[in-house]
Image (cartoon, rainbow, N blue to C red; front, side):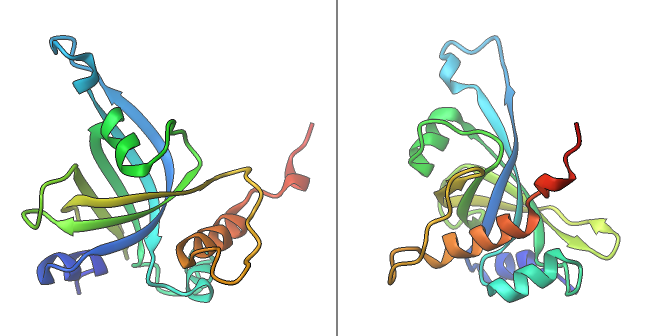
Length: 173
């Protein structure tokens, strides 16, 4: 049985993910004339954005099918990531809404995604980035919904971030 990533790639459908940046690692090539052309590997923990908050919370609590969790790696320049996401800086703990397309659908930064299977992260689906929307950073005050002011993606990401937050009372001296 293929994952939601494989199914979307085979059908040519976009993949929408709620993503938390867990690591960015520069890949330096000293021989480049333009140093800004060096790539950065952005790594995200993600979840299928089509889920409801209840489904997502059950999934991360390991009470539901976890195949809609995925790891995502995006390879692009810092400048292009800033342009796509509309942010000036990027750091671990930032949350994004990311839309991916199968390779060949359009040009864009390369991405590889792997959904969680019974034996861990097994597949590696090649994709391209279509859109990246910055949502918030850990530590930001959550937005209170006022009509349609808080988008569905941000509300879902806030619910997931709150459920995954390390309890402050567990921190010892």
